[in-house]
Length: 410
Image (cartoon, rainbow, N blue to C red; front, side, top):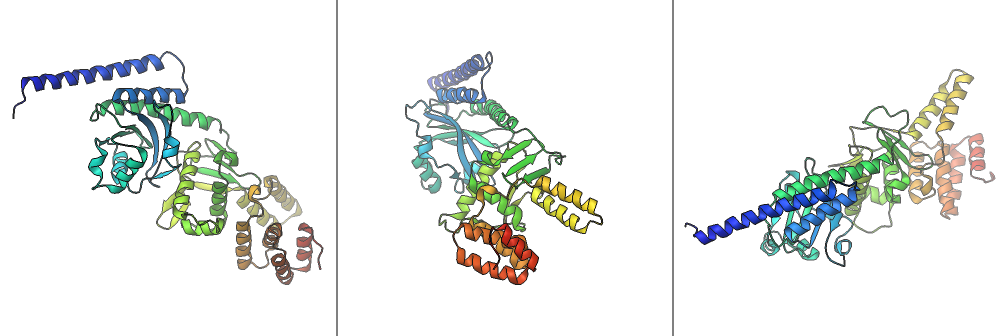
């Protein structure tokens, strides 16, 4: 059917008005951002505000996405409301397991348009439930190209719902601000030890404070902002296994925690990836069918491994001079107990017990096991381990063990 003249004229007027609004949005942003120096956060705020205004929407935000873990979380956002409920409505890390349409759109760099949330109520009920919780009646999204690390989303646009060109343009500008933010954060961590030679090298210091070094910088334990992440890393490093399931890790580190281990582990891995991304373009831990493991493409070294290697070499040294030099090098590496912030916790008991099951004559294993038991008030169990140590160690080794633990030998 042929369109009437009035319908054609009305459509042409809408197209002209949309083009004028796009031009005005771009010029306004240019005037705001090109003549003064702005922080990445301020640039992002202006972009999100412009998107809200263009689409007459009530919220616009940059959402970080991890396609591997299927987790998303708001990073920057803007709305005109006097009461911002973003952090109230969303969890710290939201699952994308039931948002396959969105995951595929981000993965392939295609815009996502949902003009009416009610239309997906029956076909995509899990997606609809999320819309209900977040107050979404309609939504428009575009991934940040060229790398789909995040997407720009507009909630409840009242106009131009099918116009994605301006959203993709704003997403590209927002990506620049996002990368600047990450670069600025990374500059605060610039430093690398001498044994870092390439972008594939990672050096982890476990003695004393946990530190992670790459060719781009250093992450300290405080930068991780989570004791659980520190313990997770230490567990994976010293357990000796290649891959670990979420349940295995949770039972080893937090046996009294009854919450969902798979969800909790995804959240921890996501937070670690975001932080490690400040000093490396590669992922430190990857997920496999068998569980989580360190990225096989990385060359990961630790100070405690180097310490053990030096001690082994010293024990085999042919001369006293060489032995002393090797031991000095080992002492230089020792900056305190392994993950001192978690000294005495129950999981150290498990590692010590495992080491003794493999090598019953390991005096250091007895030290850590007895020390950890005593710290937690398990004196009777500690006494039993003393008896086992006495059976498996030499008289001299047993006396040294008692002395190091501050006890008298009986």
